[in-house]
Image (cartoon, rainbow, N blue to C red; front, top):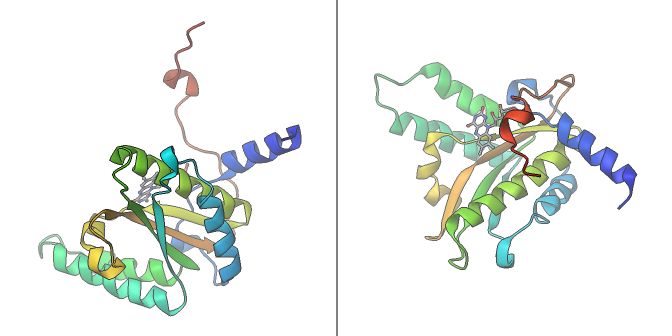
Length: 191
Ligand SMILES: Cc1cc2nc3c(=O)[nH]c(=O)nc-3n(C[C@H](O)[C@H](O)[C@H](O)COP(=O)(O)O)c2cc1C
C-alpha cells in the first residue's frame, strides 16, 4: 500500500457525512454499483470469520413495499396521543426519495459474543458508507424504534436482528466538516 492510498483514504474518511433523503436527487443508483458497495461491506473485519452482516436491498418497487411497511408500523405502534401525521408521511417520503434503502441485519453465529457480531456488522456498514461517499452517493444509518417489529417483513430467522436501515441517494450537498469534540479529549497516551 502506497502513500497515495493513505491520502485517498484519509480524505474519504473525513469527507463522509450523513446525507439525508431531503437532499437526494432523482437519479437511479445502478444495481451493479450497489453490489460493488456491498462487496466493500463484505470485506469488513470479522472475528473467527463469522461474517455476521446480512442485507436486504430495497430499490424500485421494493421501496414502495418498505414505505408501506414502515409507515404502517409507525401507525400501529405509536399511541394515538403521540401520533404525528407529519412523521407518518415523512416516513413514506424519505423512502420514496431514496435511490435504495438497505436493511442492516446481524446474524448471530453463537461462535463469538453478540457484541462482536454487532461490531463487525457496524464495520461493514462503515465500509458501505465510505465506498458510497467516494462514489458520490450520500447515505445515513437510520435506527427507528419500529425495527424490532420488522422480523416477519424482512423474513428474519430466530438468530437474526435488524439494526436499522441505510438510506442512500445521489445528492449535490457541499462538503461540510465533521462536528466532533477534540480527539485530545478522547485519548490518553501512555509513553
Ligand atoms: C448505529 C447508528 C445509528 C444511527 N441512527 C440514526 C438515526 O436513527 N437517525 C439519524 O438521523 N441518524 C442516525 N445515525 C447517523 C448519525 O446521525 C450521523 O452519523 C451523525 O449525525 C453524525 O453525522 P456525520 O456522520 O455526518 O458526521 C446513526 C449512526 C449510527 C452509527
